[in-house]
Length: 97
Image 1 (cartoon, rainbow, N blue to C red):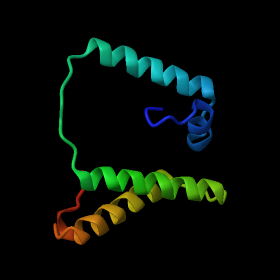
Image 2: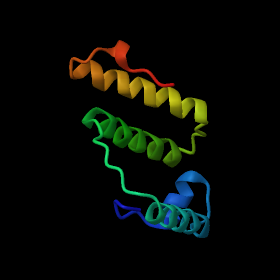
Image 3: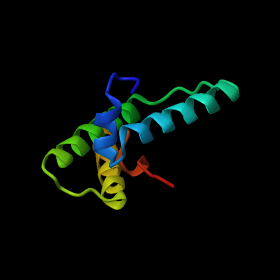
């Protein structure tokens, strides 16, 4: 939503209705207003991985390829390893809990 995507488009990608997306947005907005603001710098590698994962997910949806949580996690790991390798950080440091 922050990037300008429409709620209906986001809902379609995640298998939700536009009203469900709106409800989630409202709940996140309400909880973030109540919580104190914490800032945390995010790695450019992580941001690039998330963007590439988003593009890949959209491509899979366009092709009507089902994407499970496990497949999404595996793709995220492989993208992160590749990006870290490209930037010389080494693939072994790419771990998830």
